[in-house]
Structure formats: structure tokens, C-alpha cells
Length: 425
Image (cartoon, rainbow, N blue to C red; front, side):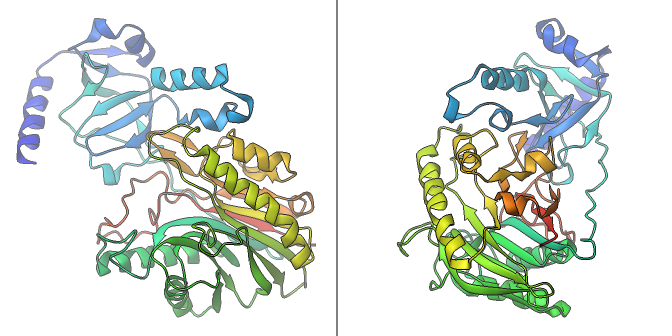
């Protein structure tokens, strides 16, 4: 660390002695070699698309993952997909700097960036790049008569430490995680939470519900009837004063030993005030490996999707209702095959309709929707609004490495929650 600091200080002194040439970003990128080893001031306003240990990814506007907007596997490789990939690479730059990555967030604005141009097509500065924060995303309370449902990945929430996700997590860090999650859940004012990445069993939901109920509201949970296990599943947490559960939960998998048994299941809910019922299916599909394309693990995600679509008619029959809401982390962007398969099965993809050009997740500087909201035709007619709430994806996040002085509700996970407001009828 000391050597790195000395190097950056030497770079800073060297750079400050050079003349600075004003340049537009497009001019720099079209004739990079002409500016190599020169100090430049980029007059084009730039947006932070990602922050890392010693660098920022900047572009004239936020970058979206090509899989979010280009045709996926269902229609083969498209020219648009490759065009978007090339466009993202051509329009973005990487600047190596001294910023604290924990204090920078995606969407921040950078103006008049000064740095030295390197032959590796990067920029180098020994200083901290000044960024202007965009206003934090405000979330209004649901209106009178509306029922609010939230789908959220809360990133490896475990009660037992030392296992799958928390082998390097301390009790103090776990306490910070719980406090942040509870603070965020309280701010959402939701009646039902469909939560991914909870430890399978009762311990983790109980721990979270106990923390929530310290505020006075009556929350309860429902999860698959499985013993406590060192793996991730899902659960529903609901306000018993607003809704009740009816019938048993129904898994998309018959084999209780299946890794996905507790990750994909449906529950029927009834609004107490009106007696109206509907079904929520919480689903967490197989993840891709870091840095891989839509091809990676696609077969497994399609198997998840087939199991889900086979289960939904059973859920409608069991719960006696056609109103179905699908939530969760699908680990697929909008144009990928599993998403398009669900849409073709008759479930509307509500987020691209209700929150256009938005996102719930960011990876390596590219944003998109991994967290979804689908609805059957009768359910779609009862959705008043649907949107992501940007309290996580824009911030740097590292599981189990919370700053102990961070008292905010932000960055409790790496995914943004999906907020769905309903008027049941």
C-alpha cells in the first residue's frame, strides 16, 4: 500500500508539470495515438458507470448490458448484440485514480476530467477525480387502497456463520447487514416481501422477522418446510395486519434434495380488508459465472424455467386463482432465452413496460434487469406501478465487508429491490 501511494504521488507531481490540452471525448477516442502520453482535459461531461479499487469506468451516458437490449439465444446471435458490445467498448474509458471506490457510485457526473493518456487506451491521474452525486432515489409510500409487494435479493443472508456465504463474516458485520436490511425494508412500506438468498430453514427468516418486529408491526414469514441448511433459498415476509397466507407453499421442484427446491416456490396471499386473493411465485434461477455471456449456464436456467412454467398451472389450481405475480432474481437480462420463454408463455414482463431504460443490477460498468416482475393477464391489470428502487446497484458492494460506521440503508446487497404497487379487484 505504501509503495502504491508513493507511486501515485510521483505520478501526480509529474502530471501537474505538463501542459493540458482540452479535448472532446469523441476526438480523443477517434485519434488516441495522437494524444498518447499527453495531459488532456476532457470537456465532455461523463457518467460513472462503475467504480473499482483503483479505477473508474466513465462514458457519456450509462452503459447497458447488450443482453438487455439485443436478441438473445432464442433468435441466435444478432448483429445488434455485437454492435452494442462494440459501442459500449468504444464509448467508455477507464481512468486510474485515487478515489475511494466506496464513496463513488454509478450515475455520478464527472466534468473537466484531467489525466494523462496512456498507450493502453487508459487515463492516468495521481489525484482524486471529483464527482457530483446525483440525488438519491426517493421512494413514495403506497397510496390508500394499494397493496405493496417487493421482490428483493438480499445477498446471502445467513443466520449461521462459518458456512457457505459467511465463512469470512464476523458477528459485527452480520449485525450491520441485519440493521441495513431492516432499515431498507421499513423504508419500503411493503405488505409482502419476496426475498432471495436467505439461508434455507427457519433461523434466518426468524432472525430478520424478530428485528423487524422491534418496530411494533406484526410480521411473519413463510418458507419451504426444510431443515436449516448451509445453502441459499428464499422466503416471504408479510404484514399479518394486511394479508394472510392460505394453503401450503408449492415448490417448482418435487425433489426436496434439489438445490432449487427452496429457491423456486409459490404462495397464495389474501388481502384481509377485501378478501381478494393472488399468487406470488418467488424464483431464483441459476447464476452465470462472473464475466460470462448469456450462453453460460443457459441450459440450467432453461431447466429452471421449464420447472417454473410446469408448476404455475398447479399453483393456480391449488390456490384457486388466475392472478399470478412472478418475482425474484432470474439472473437473465431482458432479451435472454429464459425471459423470452416466460413472456411467450403468457406472462407480461412488467419492468420494461413500467420502468423503461432502467435497471436493477450493474456488473463491470454495464447495467440491466436481472430482477424481474412478470404478471398473468388478470394480474397485470391490477398493477398500478412497478419500478426498481436504486439503493444498492449504484454503490460499490462487497459481501461481508461493510464499513462499520456506515449507518445508511444503502448497499445492503448488490441488487436493487423491485417495488410493485397493486389494487386488488
